[in-house]
Structures are given as C-alpha cells and as structure tokens.
Amino acid sequence: MTTAILELTSTSTATVTQAYAYAFDPTPEQVNLLRSHIGGSRFAYNALLGLVKTNWDENRVRKDAGEEVPKEEYLGTGHFDLLYLWAKHRDELAPWWGENGSSTYNDATQRLSRALTNWKKGTAKFPTFKKRQPGGSVRFTNTAVRLTDSHHVRVSRVGELKTYESTRKLYRHLERGSGRIVAATITERKGAWTIAFSVQVQRVVPATRPPERIIGIDVGLSTLYTGATPDGNHVLDVKNPHHLVTAEKRLAHAQRVASRRQGPRKGVAPSNRWKLAHVRVQKVHAGVANSCRNLIHETTTLLAKNYDLIVVEDLNVKVMMKNHSLAKHIADASWGEFTRQLEYKTKWYGSSLVKAGRFYPSSKTCSQCQTVKAKLSLELRTYHCEACGLTLDRDLNAAVNLARQGLAGTNSVTGRGGEVRPSQQTLAGEAHPDEASTETPPEVGA
Ligand SMILES: [Zn+2]
View 1 (cartoon, rainbow, N blue to C red):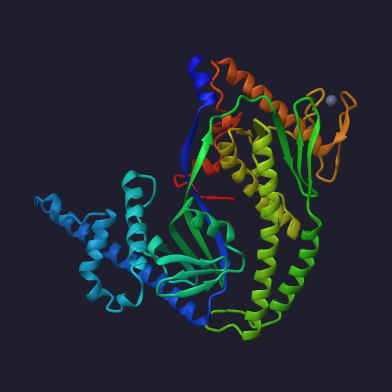
View 2 (cartoon, rainbow, N blue to C red; view 1 turned 90 degrees about the vertical axis):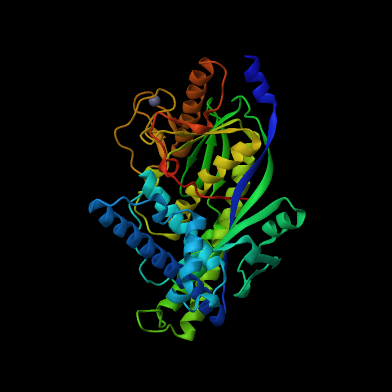
C-alpha cells in the first residue's frame, strides 16, 4: 500500500516528442528545390539498397560454392555504415549529389537502415526499390530548419517557406527554450505541401490520480461530444460548431471552381488559374482544420484536467459509417484526433484514459436496466427501452454506459491491489490498431 500512495503523490519530468504540422505555399523555385531533395533521397535509398543487395547476393553465391566469407565482407546496415557507403560511391552514382543539402542523404540512409533492421527483426518484408511517383517526402535534420518568425520557416538550400497558419505556439516554445526541434519532414501530396516538425518538449508529468471523477464520452455528428457520469448526470455537451457548416459551403464552392480548371494530370501542367483555385481550397481546408483543432484542444484539456478517468468508445465502428459530407469527414478526423489528444493529455494532467472494447454495444444497451437492443437505427435520436420504459437522448444513454464501464473497470483493477493505471489498457477488447503498430506516431498537441 505504501508504494501505491507514494506513486500517487510523486511527479516526474518527462521529455515528450510532439509534432507540429503546417501547410505551406512554396514558390515555383522552391517546388523544384524540394522535389530535387525528395528525388535525391529516393535515388540514394535505391542506390544503397542495390549495393547492399548485390553484396549480399554475391556473398551467398560464394558461400554456396563452399567458400568461407568473413563477416567484414558483408556490407553493414547501420545508419553510419550506409552514410559511409554513400560517401564512397556518390561521385560515380550521383555526380549531382552536391545540389541537395546533406539532409537528403541522411534521410535516405536512416530510412534504409530502419527498413533493413525491421526486416532483420522479422517485423517487415525485405525493402523494395522506391518507385518514381508524384509526391513524396524528405526529412531535414534540425540544423537545416529554423523558424524565422511565426509565419516563416527557413530551410537550408530551399529558402524561406511561408506557412498558411501561424506557427506561434511552436515559435514560443523555441523562444522560451522549452522545446527543441529534432527534425522536420516536408511532404508533397497531390500538389499540397506540409512541413511537420518533430519537437522534444520538457514536461512535468504528475502521477496518475485515483479514479474518483469518472466520465464517459460518446462522440457523434450533430453533438460532437456528449459526456456523462456513472450516475447518469449529463455533464458535457459540445455541439458541432456552426462555422463548420458555413465552411462546408465555402469549400464546396472553391472545389467546384477548381474542378472546372485545368488540374495536374500525367504529362500536363496545371493551369495558373487552377493553381489559384487550388490555393483557395487549401486555405478553406486549413481554416476548417484549424478551428476544429482548437475546439478539440479546448475539450480534451478540460476533460483531462477535471476528470480522473475518461472512458471513450473504440471508434473503428463509427469510422466505417458511409457518409460523404464534410461534417462527416471532419467528424471522422476529429474523433481520431480527440482520442489521440486525450491519450497524451491524460498523462500530462495525471488522469487516465480507457477505451471501451470495440464490441461493447454502448449505444444499444439500456443504461437503466442493461437490456441490449438487437438493432438501433442511426436516425433514431432518442433511446427508448421496451423492457423498462426508459426514454433518453441516444448519445447521453451511450455516454452513461461508457462511464459505468469505466467504473466497473476501476473497481476490478483497484480490487487487485491499489495500482490504478488503466490508461494503458483496453476494457473487454483487443489492442487498438494504433497501439499494435511498431512505430508510434508523434503526438500533435498544444
Ligand atoms: Zn431498460
């Protein structure tokens, strides 16, 4: 018991890696330079993979012929082995290599080293050659990127990039010295450019609080988040904001304009008028994403600060719903983002997050008598129980059920010996696909 109490009162400092991503608008010259970096990285990756493969194949033939091949004659797959290999061969393989910054080849060797390591560990197939295709990404080392102000990023060899959104939050972290850029990845996808900074931030992490204040959250379309306590109190009600509806009209208009103009196709350059229309679409998108993100941040911070245990449903089922409106699109994106933010904010503020199992029927179960309906149409906004006569808002009913799942879960966990750390587990279900992946994605946050 003593150790448990100690654990609950102590705090610690942790370095967390957060991602800050921004859309930006490169000039035509910058597009050429960035594409050269992306292409250079792909070239180096393929060239090095070719060298390693040939070396290994040759060694295998020698071995099969009965020859003893010393270990030193195998090309190494560490990051520095590959960097050395590149330095040795770059002049003959890529006489143009000096046109790109050193990040290009650092990126290629890191990616290839990781791919080969994963193959050796048996977690991935043997790496294949990367095909030349539109788009792609390249990672710049921390020495190659610098924020000049809250709207400009200087990338060595590329120049000053102008971001759509303000980078103020990241800029302040860097100014104060509370954050350090580890690297920045620039990606081109369907003509849109983003820069994602991976930033190490120092944080004081409090110990996990005992689960006294419990809330269950149901996520939906018209009401984004409905929250309830295990005793049935409706304590959170976040509506889908109205500005998203007006943004939907603006976006539809911008997309219609763009679709009438000459866009990028194989072998055909997009018209200047299309580029203008495309920038407009991008800006509306960025605006919507931004205001949506702010709302999610507000909600998740409030929850992580004011509750000890937060229960959400595993959202995969909802994501599979077929509906192509923007509201749905935003909801899809924001549900994932909501859980992701809760995952790290609960750690920051000493609360816990529990995901109810994927097959737990939170919407179909009656929160009063626990009878489970076989079917519940999506259009029905009110839950009516034939067994006990309960009539309740559908989302609220689901939220109460989730809160009770949390209560039941903590009772069984605390019953086992006072160690309350439910944030790592999934109630009555298998691991979330995000947790199953080998590479943890960086957290996006305030
Ligand atoms: Zn009932």
